[in-house]
Length: 347
Ligand SMILES: NC(=O)c1ccc[n+]([C@@H]2O[C@H](COP(=O)([O-])OP(=O)(O)OC[C@H]3O[C@@H](n4cnc5c(N)ncnc54)[C@H](O)[C@@H]3O)[C@@H](O)[C@H]2O)c1
Ligand SMILES: [Zn+2]
Ligand SMILES: [Zn+2]
Image 1 (cartoon, protein in one colour):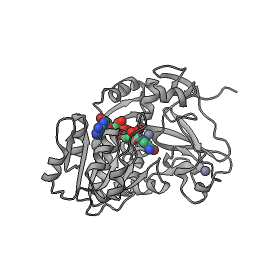
Image 2 (cartoon, protein in one colour; image 1 turned 120 degrees about the vertical axis):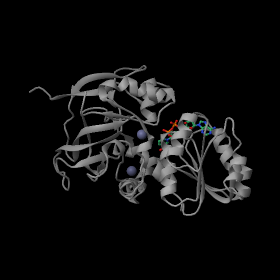
Image 3 (tube, helix red, strand yellow; image 1 turned 90 degrees about the horizontal axis):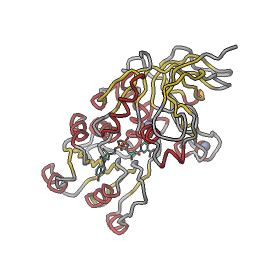
Image 4 (cartoon, protein in one colour; image 1 turned 135 degrees about the vertical axis):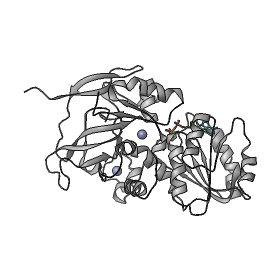
């Protein structure tokens, strides 16, 4: 019997680029679910894989289908799957965890020591169908717009980082106005922050962060953050810092403008080791928290925040049918983009 075929974006071999190819539709094994993909979003990780940079050489074993930000509907249930139905609207947690290590047992699956990733370690979602374990399937209310749910994975990184701390009445500094930083602006305002200031060196992205509700969006290559803080009425410094750039310079600046007792969560991944101003961290009594992935509860928070009125659609700057994926990656590589959404229901 011939396997049913589907379109997919495949990294065919070591080197730059992706190929739109016909590959077999995956078969859900016991405990797995097959999802018909409707929309996907391009993540920075996908751009690393597309460009084939040193991170990609280390992590990707071609040929494979990439992609991990998506929304779709359940197409088929593998043997033994209960509590889910064909046709339900879903997304999926991209980290597949072991279920038996200490962190899996205590509910902190984001710290599983045996985690593997959809679209990095196994075939991903830039395809008409993707197959994942049932426990990774996330039900999504029908009322939520699919364009936005397509990048709930990235929204989840922003939610995990921002909601690590109580934000009510607090002054927040976000370093890095990439898609995740922009979304974090909206979350912080929604969650009750007083002032949200975001920094970047890219004007296009700072403008999107303003659309997301930033009280100030500061281009640190030519503006003085201290002056902006004075204008915003920040006397003692920032209460909360969200590092979302991966830049050592941004972290250094953040540490210098935190108030004593301030709290920082670190999401941005640096290309090289970053020197830390230990003495300032100590004398200010700062708390620094590393953030990896999402908590499973973040998925519920995201749906409820959107239903409660948080609009993250301003971060979408480009929409293409999947056959025009090259234009999507070009937009991401140009630096003049927020989120790029690919539609897998039309060619
Ligand atoms: N920890 C995790 O689980 C996890 C998950 C997803 C993404 N990430 C990381 O989070 C970060 C944010 O993701 P993204 O997709 O929005 O990334 P991105 O690369 O699109 O955005 C980073 C932004 O930081 C800006 N920047 C560079 N230097 C700066 C400086 N000195 N001050 C302020 N801004 C500066 C860049 O111009 C860019 O707009 C990235 O580093 C990414 O690798 C981590
Ligand atoms: Zn992602
Ligand atoms: Zn585990």
